[in-house]
Every structure is written in C-alpha cells, then in structure tokens.
Image (tube, rainbow, N blue to C red; front, side):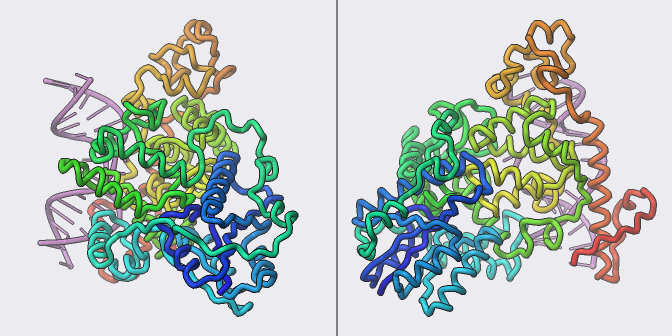
Amino acid sequence: MRTIYWFRMSSLRLHDHPALLAAAEGSSCLYPVFCLERRIATPYGENRRRFLLESLRDLDAGLRSLNSRLIVLDGAPEVALRAALADWSVDRLAYQLDLASAESKRSAAAVDALAEAAGVQVLARGGHTMCDLDALLRRAGGSPTTSYAPFVKHFEAEVRAAPIVARPAPSRLPPVGGEATAADDAARAVPAPADVGLPADADAAVLVRGGESAALARLDEHLQRRGGAWAAEMEKPATSPMALEPFGAGTRSTTVLSPYLAFGCLSPRLFYTRLAAEAYGRHPKHAMPPVSLHGQLLWREFFHTCAHGTPNYERMVGNPICRQVPWGDDKELLAAWAEGRTGYPWIDAAMTQLRREGWIHHLARHAVACFLTRGDLWQSWEKGAAVFEELLLDVDPALNAGNWMWLSASCFFYQYFRCYSPVAFPKKYDKDGAYVRRWLPALANFPAKYIYEPWKAPIADQKAAGCIIGKDYPKPIVAHDVASKANMAKMAEAYAAHKEGGASKAAATPTPKRAAPAPAKKTKQMKLK
DNA sequence: TCCGACGTTGGAGCG
DNA sequence: CCGCTCCAACGTCGG
C-alpha cells in the first residue's frame, strides 16, 4: 500500500492524529504532503503566513526524526494532489477531517472526487474536534442547538458513550517513496519566508511561534503554573483584555493557545485530557464551564457543531440561524475601524494590536466587534469577520463567524440593548491607559483623565501631551451615545421584522407583549428562505 | 400551551 | 473600590 498523507492547515501535528496513524498502518511507503500556493498572494496576513511556515518547519523536523519528511507541493490541494497521485502511483490518500468551514469541506470534497476518479482509496478521520460532530448533531435532534447549556448535555452524553482519548504521536512511520532527485527534494522543501512574500525582518512583533513543539511547550508551561492550580482556577471573564503580557507569569490573562488549536498544532483532546488529569484532578475546587478552560474547549466544540450543521453559516443571507439585519455599507467607516483610526483609543489600540500581533484578548474582540456592528458603525458582521480572517493568527471559521454573530446579536446572543461603551468598558480594566499608550504612541503622554475620550481634553492639555486631536490623533468618527441609541432602535426593528416573518407560518400568532415599534407599517417582511 | 428562569464577560448610579 | 439594583426587555429552553 502506497499512501499520501495530506496535512492540512488544521492538522499540523504528529500527536493525537488518528488519520495519520491509520494512514501509516499497512503502508509500505507514506508521502507526507502539504499543499501551498506559493505564488498566489495568500488571503491571510503576514502573521499567519509566518506562523504557518514555522509550523511546517516544525512538522518537517518531527517527521525527519521518524525518518520521514514533509513534502511541500506548490498549488491548491485539488491541483497538486492530482499530479501527485499519478506521479507516485499511490493506492490511498488520507487526511484529517475539518468541518469548520465551507471552504475546508469544499477542498476535501474536491480531493475526494479526484481520488475517486484516479481509483485511489480515501481515508478520512476526525481529530480536529473532540467528538464526532455528526454524533453531537444527532444528540441535538438533527439541527444544532444555539444555546450552550443544552449543548453541554449533549457533549457529556457523547463523552460517556465515546470517552475522549488523546493518542500518542507515531513512534515510527513508513519511509517516503524514494525516487526523488536532489532538485525535487529542494523544490519540495518548506519554503523560505521570502518565497511566500514575507519580509526577512517580519519578526519584530511576534507574540507566539508556530509549530507543534511550541504548542506543547506552552501547554506544559500553563499546566505547571502553581502546580496546575492556575489552569484549574482559570475563569475567562476574570481575565483582562488589556494585560500587556497576555501569558506572562503573574498576569491574569489567557493561555494564547488558540493559534495552535486553529492550525492543529495542538489537539483539543490532548488539551482536554491533560487539563482533567493535571489541573482539575489535582484541584477539586476548580472552575466549571462555561467559564473554565474546559468550558473554552466546549465553546469551540459548540461552534464547530453549529457550523457543521448550518447551511451558509458564514453568511447572513440564507443562514437560518442568523437574524437578517439591514446593515449599512460604508467603506470609509469599515476602513477606519480596520485601520485603527476611529478616534476611540480603546478600539484603535485593540485593532492595532490585532494587526501587529495577530491576537487580541477575547473581550477586546467583543468590544471592536460590537463597535463595528450593532454598537456604533452599523456595518455587517461579515465585513468584520473578513478583516479578522486576514489579521488573526487563530482564525477558525466556525468560531470567527459564530462570535461575530454573537456580538452583532445576530444569533446566540440577543440582548442587543446591552452595548459595550468604548469609553466606560476599558476604564474597568485599565484606568491609567497603559494599554492604549503601548499601542498608540501618539497618545503616550495624554492625561489619564481623557485617555479614552481625548477629544474632551482642553487644548492646553493636548498641547502639553504633544497630541492635537484632529491632527495627531483622529476625532471620533461617530458619537457613541447617539449612534448606539439609534442602532438599538434599528435592531429592535430588525427583530420585530423577524418575529413577524417567523409568525407567518403559525396561524395562531401570539400577540407580542409589547406592540412592535410602530415606525410606519414597514411591511418589509423578512423572508428567511 | 404558557410562563418563568436563564443567558461566559453592559452601563449608570447608588450606598 | 466593591457590590448591588435598575435599565427596558431579547430568545431559548424546560417544566
């Protein structure tokens, strides 16, 4: 049996890799392959490309320690693998399932089709999630639940039926088929940064290094903090979005393991089982879902299940769980938000950190997402999700779209009258504005009193700080109190339209407790299908 | 069928 | 500084 193992963007590891183990079994030779479109300007940003290369280098090193290697093919999978199947006359193609996005499903289906056409057997296994997502969907009655608590019940039942086990990395692998010339070998090596358009000195703001080794080291580090007590007690809402050292010892913040989960450098099952054994098992008074670290992994599973079971999940139109909201379409507002020049320092600092480091704290994501959508700018969550897709290291389409729907009150969360203030919220965490000063040097010397609303500073203070608002730092592009109030009314309208549309199928319309906001008849019926 | 409890992380004002 | 209540009131779930 001659087998190609197709490593994907979400499976860049050797540990706990059932599809890889299955591919190795009974193979006389195994071609470990990654497909990379080098010449195409990749749709994602520099940080993510760098992280990818580091992950590929680490994977290659791990494979070499097993007398194998990584073969990097140039081109999209459905193109590069077609040629490889023929050139290497393989019998079997194996890969790990990734059901998180329409695109990952599409590329797998395309690869399945060409393998079938070539008479090559396909072997696909789970491993990107803790459970079989179809099994979780069945427990939900076929369509995903949009509430966490019922999901946890489904998850727990599924885990009782099929306990979570993390399997070790293979201790040996079949040899790579050996007809390649030295020139072939060089061409199939992990590319240099310049080959994927990365400047050689792009390392200045690196927050986390890519690769399975780095992932496992960071996991160890967190599990060792206070003998596992830190991980056991960790509660997400108690962490600060403005900690300057997101994972340094002594700070109350998060693990920053998300990039490794997204790229598959870290197995969620390994993370889950090691937490159980080394943190929760040793510290009985531990945190619980939804706020605990286990809870975070359950959120991931929750969104993956939703994504897998929902048509058009990454879009508003045609998405049955998403509120249909008539978002605006203002390129300048979107650009100002994306480039960190809204005039609200907390928003702009977070967007600057995101662009530089490829990561911001979950609550910072809340703040900027609320601001772009229902809070202030009234722009579509899909536009925001696309910007995150470009900038974030830890892009996971299921989580990205899910959280954008959450924050825009399009699904999962509906209390749209609860709105983040770009001024009041950051004050709770960082009264002096150290985070803003760190990321927006123009405001470095601004008085703390005005750090989150600098346009209110007397001109004398602005001069003393060396920062004139409107010249050295922008004036606010919207007035938050006015915009957020107006947008809340628009949300009420969209919700009322949704209610009307949904009620049309049931004859017995339960009269709304409160008459729907009267603004004209607005017979704009939202059609959901 | 209906009603009440609840929802990972809001804001403002008060004591 | 903390914790409490109210604000005006959403959808989902379960009894």
